[in-house]
Image (cartoon, rainbow, N blue to C red; front, side, top):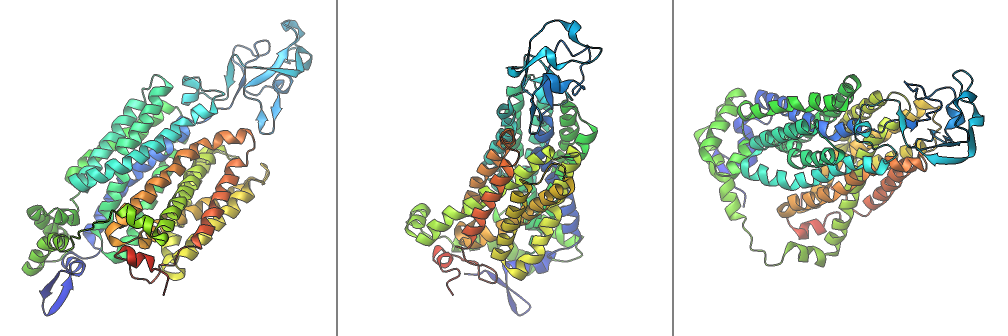
Length: 539
């Protein structure tokens, strides 16, 4: 049953009454979204800081007979002492010395006759091009898989955050969640800057996202709950753009503050300021109404209406304060059959529940994988990372423009296939063709960003209202598998530099093909029951 109230002579539902009373979008919503974009940007810091603080350092074996007191990373004689590889010089092995007589050198030259170029040995000490990451401080050279664990545990923490964020946001409110997660993000970042070993560094990478990663979802939910239905897609794109802007800030700051401890402090200490959001922003009036906190809801609604230049009628206020509790009571359904059993018995829903997680795994795998691998591109690593983050923003807004024009499936299929073409092509572009390789790389990131924002909408439209949040949460949590394994792709470049790109492309093709098995949802009524969801696309 739809709750309604007589205002004048018309019957209006809850959404219409609320929008008429406070406005779908006005000065209040604009100010609030601009404020909420700041913690959303701060969440982008967690997605990118380890890419620089735990970045791979170019290094080589030390050659005591040839290196002076201040060794040069790439001296003229380097090819005489260090084997060459397809990507440069061998970082972990050197040719075996066949003489210990340093007098065989001619001036500053280290001749090839000093080494047996048919035999190599592992390094016992190293010379670095730079020394500004945890790799140098914690002796992680030649341990690429161990170095990559920082990103993996960062993503595992993000999976934990999904559970914690939902509980805190639903029980303590959106505003309190921003304060809680913002403080935790700042505190764990501060402590991590003083890590004494790699285990401590990785542990606090995990803790930061586990107990601080919910700051984005709390900001996102609060922002979307403030606006009317017509503005939610635009608000979603705005918050996603703020997240991308946060990643851009990481790249720009890292280019100036290069030492990893200082970079961590500069990024995360300012996040302590989010504590003041407890007094700066107001709680979501929708959350207050859903929790039947009538006095707080009344004050907040009057404040929103006042800022937007509106006045709430007594009849409207009384209806708004009681509509959601009454509707929740009216909608109580005694479901004897557990949801899992109902899904298993439905071939349509079971197939859908197997396919949507694949899309999410693919999307997070490619999205985070392209960000992580961007610092390995030719050229300036900082500018490459900033460009890779910046290109997401037009991707988000492109999705906004085309989703309601060409449909969800066409948008997603095109996005996946364009991303696949770019990634696979990138794998075969020579290193000296920097312009073309960068263009392909950025187009791939643009495509997957458009897919990301479209996937939220499409997934939610495939599932019934009563269980929509559960199904969306299930797909999103499974998707974290992609972000967990994406940091492990850079070490694969030791075997062939194109392996990560080929993996991204293959996964995108698989997801594009799976899209063909699901119905188009553009212009259809949102399903309310599992039976409705089964009938999608059958008309």
